[in-house]
Image 1 (tube, rainbow, N blue to C red):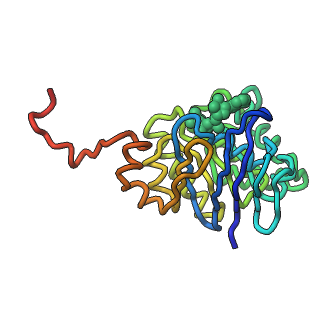
Image 2 (image 1 turned 90 degrees about the horizontal axis):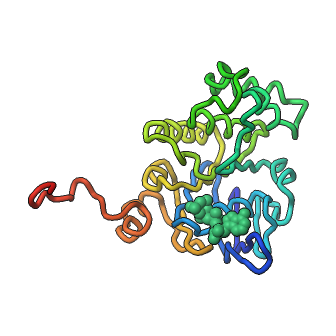
Image 3 (image 1 turned 45 degrees about the horizontal axis):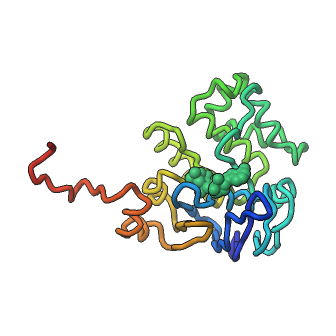
Length: 249
Ligand SMILES: Nc1ncnc2c1ncn2[C@@H]1O[C@H](COP(=O)(O)OP(=O)(O)OP(=O)(O)O)[C@@H](O)[C@H]1O
Ligand SMILES: [Mg+2]
């Protein structure tokens, strides 16, 4: 059974202003699905519509066998879908431990147990449990943001540009963390600017253009598609083919 099935989803911020104009995508159990596309295409808006932070104006969102379009964000979290926004995804003035406790508010009875499991999975968070979240590095902060989402034991995690602003090294580490998380049984739908790197760790991908999923395919297939490379993956740079006619000038 498909885990997430989005059909012809529409919506935006103001009534007159439709940003997502009929987006269709799915996530199957076990997958990492990448969502790429130009700035302003509506990628973040699409994730917010799915997660219930914005109310869809049309279309369907099914999580397993339930229609969740129109439910609010806490109700959707309770059904096992967690969203990590691109910005302001941790409480900077609170400690790492307090951030995790905030994330677990939906299920107070299992809060300590979940937190301790996450400390085991991410020892860095255990070491820093009494440090204010604002003292973490960019990569550490993203791990905390994911851990906050994991406090509700979701089956599906939506990530909006998890590697934005990270050094190449930190981004690579974070992608490894995301893959490990996926192998532990969490399906992932992630928006990424580091498109090639995202495609490398993904099963399938969608290219969102002007509020619609224009292309869909196996991640490896999209990564080697010349049109996609030229449009979205930083142009024609292909080091092996960048012939040295005359060398650098
Ligand atoms: N809070 C908001 N209120 C009104 N309009 C918004 C808001 N956030 C985004 N928009 C508009 O919605 C459109 C799509 O924005 P969105 O953030 O979904 O794009 P994106 O694909 O995530 O882009 P980026 O790659 O820059 O993150 C843009 O025209 C943007 O100006
Ligand atoms: Mg965005």
